Length: 466
Ligand code: AMO
Image 1 (tube, rainbow, N blue to C red):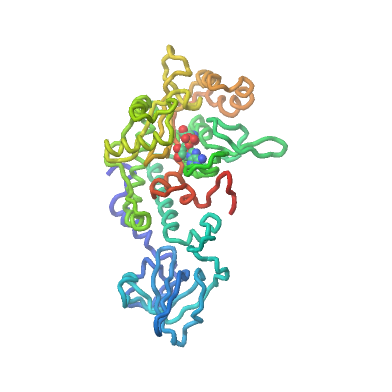
Image 2: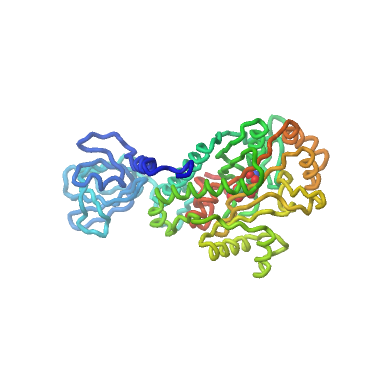
């Protein structure tokens, strides 16, 4: 067992927790249960709360399809039963059912059914638009309704497992969790467009990444930190992988001697989390999204940037010596053929492609602008899911790299010196780190066609409601 991996008893405990009834109320005679737990209550009387999906009538019976966060079940009741409430309940009404758990009369409706004694409406759906099949139903506009679907709840469950696994991995590797500010005085460090906001007579910006604050933690001697928090990009372009607000997982640590060390830890952390996701949700993901959780069996393929370009050149896909989205897809297919896994690292990007804070080759013969950087991107099934590097920690070199990246002496003096550069005048240790976009990671994991589907509420240049 490697440090940070859950032992079998721990895993069984986590599984048990995942299946502990959410609703411990109700009495022993009639426990209040979730749909997923119904098989454990076969033959017993239970109380169930959920939403009506649909109902139909057949002779003297009425059949209601009920859904809660964990699944769907059929409820049967006799129409002439005295204690039954009015049969005309609108779909999506919140209802309560009391009845006995039994095996279904017809197997096609699942392995379990409830024979209802009583059904009551807790909150009626008054709006008849509450119908997923209607053309007017927009899952982004009616987000609260879309979230009721099992597939959506599953995304949030997997996200919870992913973050809790990452947290437990990092904690076991002595990382500290930090919460950095989201309002900042300096603009973009990497060239991404930022949101500007008025700030009591001054200009402020929403952070595009917490990286500078994570680096501040390194200068401050915290040695190993991580954060899960919002990041903002004023991206005008609408692609299926970009949001203007997303959740970023950022990890930074000290005494790093190369970017490969950063990749090693990231790879171990991601494999650890993917194994947990597969064990806890693999079957559900397969059922609802038709995909298997991909866990790299061996080391993830690492390609030097120039080698990747050569490969792409041979396929006519290297455009302007840069990686395009199409070429990223091709590189993942190549990795899949070569290693059986569609993750691939591209490392050693040229300085022209990376921000000034990235450490460049230390060869004094090579002009700064032409240097190779100690950097990497991680791609999965055709999309970039992470970037990282060893950071430059030498004050003078940083200043030169800023200048070669086009920052004017005034900007360096006014913004970068007080908010960033100063940290490197006081023995800032060598360090490195990475950022992973949570929403995009989930989009790829579930094989969704857009990040809209895996963000809790999506934000893009043309959407900021609800
Ligand atoms: P970068 O800008 O590559 O690097 O972002 C890191 C990761 O964040 C995700 N991401 C996005 N997700 C959704 N919508 C967006 N608009 C968006 N932009 C980025 C991607 C990407 O790989 N500070 C550096 C990282 C570092 O070196 O630590 C950074 O932000 O998954």
